[in-house]
Length: 416
Image (cartoon, rainbow, N blue to C red; front, side):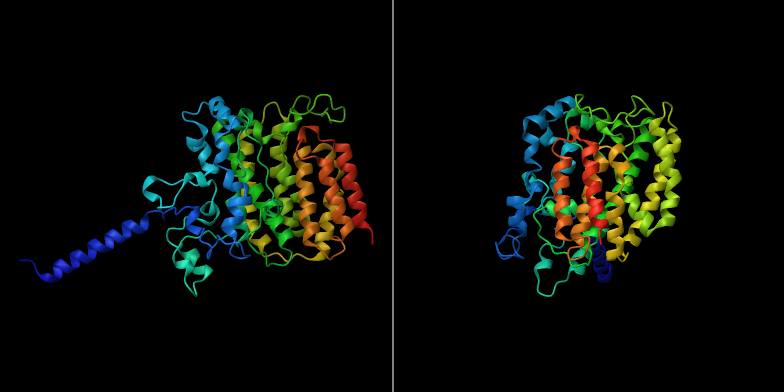
């Protein structure tokens, strides 16, 4: 007969191994209605209405439902997907919060779309504990909650889906993906509080750095794997614009070429020049290599891959510095002046550059409310610029009209 201590030791080891195996599994996906109790996040009072706001006003809640519409089903057929859009991992990766059968809590429902856990992380480990009295945010983070208070992580979470679409999806009918953290946050039905000073300006800058990093990572990966430049990295509206619009700028230097979509750099560079001039100089060579490749009939593909990886690495190193950077009224005013005065960007850069320029001055002027650059007349001019840009019909972008509107903003900001 074996000694008792061997049995006890064996049982202890078995339990430890079982716990270890359990802990190594991803937490359960609990489902949106796990947060819907009226005394938690499903109430109507401010501070307890997060679920209610998401369910009734947030477009993320409809993300799965749109996969059933005719356009989505047509796209699935054009792409040659083996299953309908609402069953395809190609679509569900971003249009839902997916979990394997063994990782679903009792209230998990794929119909929820991009629900709470899509942004806050799987809740299986922290859902119940985080309701306890005295429980802290830091304790939830240790159990797997996603840290959306960190601007870099927030932007990265958004960019998991709001970036990287390829030309195959675009040509099948998927809308182009655009991103600017502060503007996207502002148009959401807000269920959080911003406590940082100059939150809008900082959110814009951090989001732009992450967007540039992600776009460069995608460019490097696609170019390296496909041995060609993907059309999705070009300025779409070089080709897809109203042919009767006589204001559309032709490009005599590279006839017939759709140039690089530089929107994630063209506007953000003004911040780099002001706040991190040395890093901006380091970027110049890589950016020039990428731009030249898109202008060439025989692009240097290894050079593009290397340059894009270099830019991505530089942005990754820069993000933490931006997050701790001290924004001041003088800097924000200088940025608005530079961005609104960049006539070449709006005359030649195309709709996407103009769009990023407008979202930038919107974020910066709103963050400066009460300051000279955030006075009511300036904010009103920014609102007019949205009408001039006409985001609902980008193929009709009129560079002369929009540039004139930006020039007017530039003069207003320059006034004492």
